[in-house]
Length: 213
Image 1: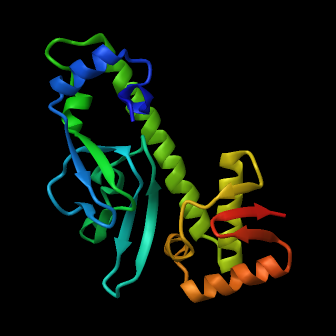
Image 2 (image 1 turned 90 degrees about the vertical axis):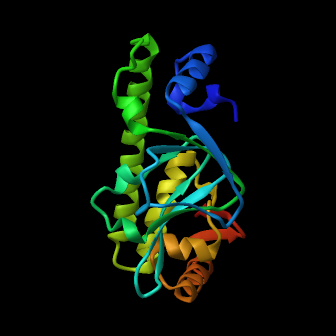
């Protein structure tokens, strides 16, 4: 992905982007599908930008239950700061596909550089917008998890996806197994409920393609 397509550098010229990347001492790392990108209880690497691929932020509790907190796609950001008050020792970021991550130290973002670059303020504004979008995404997930039944969780999440795609037909970002982890429900129970909803003509589902009827 070209840097100019990244929301972090919105309205910043490409030549200025390269200058800022050097000024901020950023670095990139690549990861293979299934590899752990980050343990949130390790040293804080600042903000990670997913430049290529897909990843998930995952919570694993002591009983072994796995919950997907976030599904990350190209251009999105992640980092310990978003779960500052959570039990970080149980949170990881895992590559769903092969990924390329750029890390930026948070102090370099919030502090003015010695040269007082005029585009620094634009970058801080972009970061705030991205944090706002991430906060909305986390709140949407909490809304899904607040539903008492599996069906209500499914419908609430599907309605969010339909709204994001401006269509009652959309592609699930998860496998059914991963969807169960995102909804924090039993996988077999989820499969049964999806089957009932299909039989009752509430939804159509073909692999990852879903239509709300």
